[in-house]
Length: 474
Ligand code: PNW
Image (cartoon, rainbow, N blue to C red; front, top):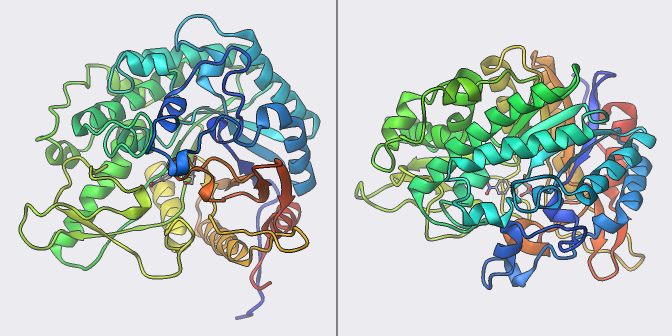
């Protein structure tokens, strides 16, 4: 076997970068935008690292043309971004605000002009605050409001955007937002978190139907999930059961209804002490199981779990990678302990393990037969200090990307229908509860001057995107 194999990707493989509205746009009071739950949360003392907010972020709202030029310079042919709901429909109900739609139309036109294919996500966590005040995702009405908003955006941009994603990582919205409270809106109510999960599923199904009704034929409908790769610490029955529980709460709570039209019995049994699931109405599951044209998978790191040792009532250890909270994001799984997986870690504390990505892609190749897969997020945070010449050398990120692209290639050779890869992220940006203290960008951003500088990983990724080849060594 050669030690210098070059892994060749298919000609049609889509290479892109990814961002989200609240993490990069800033301009939170421009153009008629109203506050989202993330504005409120970030402005609440103690919620975000050093009191950072998205008020300015990367000023992408003003600098989007420059940012599209960065993508051209990089040589990527696709861009995944999200639309800010409160920019388009400030109260979360009623007519769209034209200035909000105009911003996204200008962005899309700039992308198309540059030959970059837009991949639009409707919801990357920035719920209009007014809808939270009316109950948020634990309230059924929010799912209907989401579908209405989806239709407004599809009416406005359906003539020029082909790739449509309803939700990004509903697990984070439901369980970090309403369970552990480390994300907006910061509620810590396990029953509300499970209701939120169902209403996110319902919102996805209703929005999928609205998009199918509105978009021209040929449009591609997808959802981006962050399914967990859960590994039991030992082969004992108790540890394997702990892994099963977390798989149910992290992954199957979404893929069950979305892919198979059902919540699995073990999930319902595990959570029976938390909720009776009366939020699931007749007909909901059929709506949620709307045919998908593709499935988006976000992957960063696997999870290592065991049955909590000691008395059966011992509280679960928390996974630091999921943010520190006295409250669990895993309702009904108090008997599960999380452990640090062995191996090198990124600045998030997340273990680098590309084999998890191959596993996930092969799993969904089996569980969603005929549904093309995209990696809609993958990447790593490192310290990334500019040197004396202002250059940023990030060999660890290059190694991370090389490893994970190797994992994607491996899944392809084993038959998975993987169509594209979106690096998280184009720019260093507002990393949620970590504020600006964690940098995922291909481009370094100086948040005082807003200067963007390509890291060495950006140049590396650009060469990969241009050639479709991932070199094994340097
Ligand atoms: C994802 N967890 O967030 C998001 O889609 C991005 O907006 C974010 O910047 C990126 O990954 C990096 O964090 C996650 O605790 C946040 O398991 C937290 C978790 C997973 C994903």
